Image 1 (cartoon, each protein chain N blue to C red):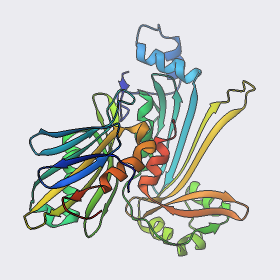
Image 2 (image 1 turned 90 degrees about the vertical axis):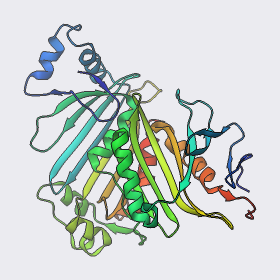
Image 3 (image 1 turned 180 degrees about the horizontal axis):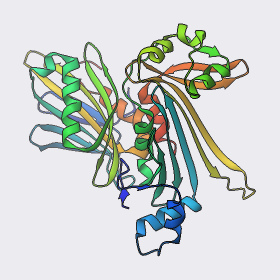
Length: 156
Length: 208
């Protein structure tokens, strides 16, 4: 049990959990399978977004994938600073801060290659975004949401 | 001057006498500069971080207001610079000042060294003691863009008696090599391994 009671089940074959007070939005935009929106805090809705897509050549080398993801963010957002990054045999996690609409936001990402049972392999990225001053208070909750990912039919 | 979110830009270089000249300027000349000076003179709280490394000393001294934060940035070979940032930008400015970045967690037992060993890093030219050189942090000190950073935050106590509430964070390490939190103990200074994420949590929670 992870203490999260809102479970979103996606047709791609996964579930993700969030606190009961959050809102789940399915397929909000192309390539984005699921978005969890927390209640507004500091004039921003902290969120966790699941991006799922075909595997790429980059994701075959997890270190290169992480660096490419960081470089891509650095080119697409203002004042990007990579704060932490770790790569293991499953995927990577990275932490960064950037500015959007005059707000300082902290971004934490988890990414891995997802072998769908009996099907294909897809690239998954979970991106959690919060106002920077809320990161410390929300970090454990965000990690719990990220860790709740399950393939449908997978035992808890 | 403009109010920045994130990296301080368009600051005012504080050549000799510049601060006094700004104080004497008409307030409508530059409203953001006027607000920055007001906060500088009467802050709600103050945060100061000093970072030393092989390339010299850097510092960021923040004076916090409700909507605006004045920061005086000090860098090697540059005159100090006054800029205005949003209060929630403080962690990012601190991270940039100290060079916070990805590094492995170096899973070794904590080490206690005499306080003089740490102080010797802060005074140019930095001297690396044999105890630090023999520890994994020694690799960062030999090879890396190491930083010793000391952060202090202070705000007046609600008691109204002139006392202050404070927080302190001292860190040694280098991007790519590892980070260690420094804590004073009866035996000296205790170096405990940490992660950039844990340090960022500390910075983001600083104003909480």
